[in-house]
Amino acid sequence: MAAKIIDGEKISARLRRGIASEVESLRESSGVTPGLAAVLVGNDPASEIYVERKTRACGEVGIRSEEVRLGAETTEGELLSVIERLNADPEVHGILVQLPLPQGINETAVLGAVSPLKDVDGFHPENMGMLMEGNPRFISCTPYGIMEIIDHLGIDVLGKDIVVIGRSNIVGKPVAAMLLNRDATVTVCHLCTKNLAAFTRGAEILIVAIGCSEFIKGDMIREGAVVIDVGINRDGNGRITGDVDFESASKVCSRITPVPGGVGPMTITMLLSNTLQAARLAVEGKGKG
Ligand code: GUN
Image 1 (cartoon, protein in one colour):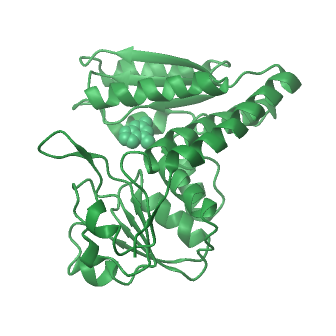
Image 2: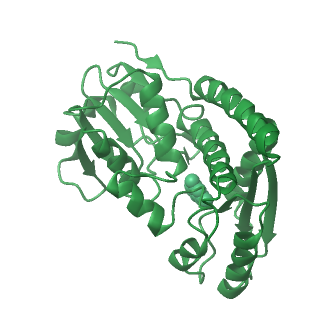
């Protein structure tokens, strides 16, 4: 079987057109232009590229954006003051603090300081809790993008056997919660899982987010499965690779996301969607308090 490639750029482009027109409608009806503040601490090259892509994408759909760049020597207290200022700024509807943060800054304290009503990354414990309850407000962007891909494929996950590899707060845990909320049968595996292939071979949908280049091979995948590869790695030659060995996997599965061009563009698109949502909450007055 030769797998069909899931084109994340194409799905994103369609969603972004919809977001752009909703941004315009909100502006016309309320006079409010959604605004995003992206906070970058230090000079991690990958983070710099991600933040630039995010703010450029904002411009393309009419969202106002500002980059707040802070030096690597920034203290936790200074970062918390910046977040406090952004929390109070009525023109900023969404705040994202790019991760990872430099050593010495407590990530939990920082993410918890972002107003839950501006938390467009969905990392605040209140938003994580609401997702667990099945009553989400903001869903973190990569899991949200994965669900949009599944919906785009027209797959009803109810009762499906889905294996998630990776148990991070950013991807593995929230995507598992979203799938459970839709009555899928979800198994979460990770790098300590014994006999991983025994789980992956049973998966009708396999979602891989472990950050290990080409870790999942074709012989670990069930014939006809849908494979969603969240990894973005670089191999020894500087080539960008996923967590799945695309070559062998695409001979076995029915559909697969490529890297790059699969989940990556969806993550940024869902950030735009969350920022629009945050601006709507502010307009409706739920942004107070
Ligand atoms: N670092 C890696 N992924 C993400 C993300 O989705 N949001 C933020 N803020 N930082 C990240």
